[in-house]
Image 1 (cartoon, rainbow, N blue to C red):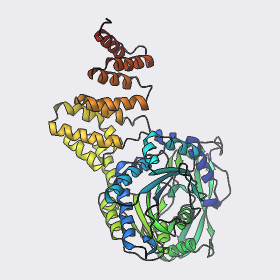
Image 2 (cartoon, rainbow, N blue to C red):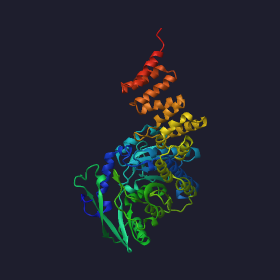
Image 3 (cartoon, rainbow, N blue to C red):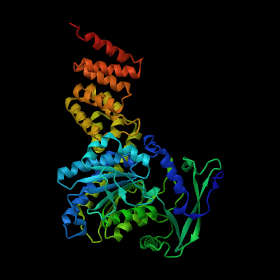
Image 4 (cartoon, rainbow, N blue to C red):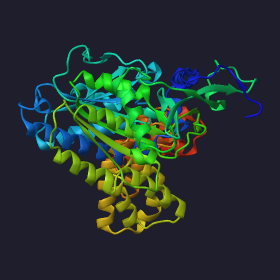
Length: 529
């Protein structure tokens, strides 16, 4: 830090320029922050997370319906969708996967329909995911919508397709929120508890003299220093925030604490629109309960293009309890990453048996946290599992496309010797994986990989359909056109095959396989009469 220089005086952390620096990074990076994996996103953006979240939201809705119209939570208009607002949707993959899961579950169980609303503060991100073809059907049926929304300055949410404005009027139905890796990036304050005294930790931001604070990549270079500052209560003149500080002053011996003021204000403002009725799901690295905060130190925030702090789940839990609700957090002690669910019941207690059981079954027993840890450990083993194990892993992941792509070459190596029932199992797996395909980066090549595997299993019709999809989604990919041509040729459609080979040759005039394909189908063409 010796070459860093301060760019501001010591101020409350929530007032620091560090938050503006972070926003500039995300605004400039746009969708590339996710497609280049500069910002890690697999841990909260996989099929296992979507399936688990969907089950918890369905359990909560079933509890609400069971309460009936006499309870605030049970007052549901079945003709209006249950809005599921995702904050910081980034690349859009989780929103897509979650919308699919909720659509299938609600139809199968006869529940009111859910509508997933993907939001982001960055217009480039909203433009990026709102124009994806994968959403076309879901949007047409009212299962998905999009909005520009800045959680740092919460206000009404205007939906792009329906034109509705959420929050302009009281919402008739409970509101669901998805908040993954957002709490830790919104404005926070910091406090020090020592010897029964509460002090505010004020911060200043430092940068190397060669880095312009207005530069888009300045966030990768920031360092922080802190200094204690006296506090008198009430500090905020806000019952929620001051109540949390009093809780920590009486319940902790010594600690440095982050208070997520930005996240709490955003959640409270959004949930107020539904009368504080709804379910919140948060996936983040953070502290779960009061005891986890004791003797903690803040330190420098980790950097990943931008930066992030540890999230204080306990503070969000206090918000839920203040509105008559409760919260659940994962119990695994071996990971900082956690998933928590918060139930707000409109100020009146409610028995939420299905919500609790769904959380236990789908998140706390072997949920996304355990799945991701297992996935990392399995990759570290560097073994080549046999086909039956690979197929079981795919089921465990809820048929996650990214995992499928990781094991693509292993599938290809083993299908020639696979038994008939294993091949059929793989065909079924491919069908589920392709449904969930939502490529973000160049390594997400699931559709092409699936088409190749189907072709090698002599499932030519299915392979043909997927190669045709590749030519639509990646029209400049020569291998897509060539393989599509091969399938068409095997089906006897020489004219269409010729066109596909010519498209491949147009992309790469030296493509020898395409030239041979053209010669072959041209030679087979019947002579003119």
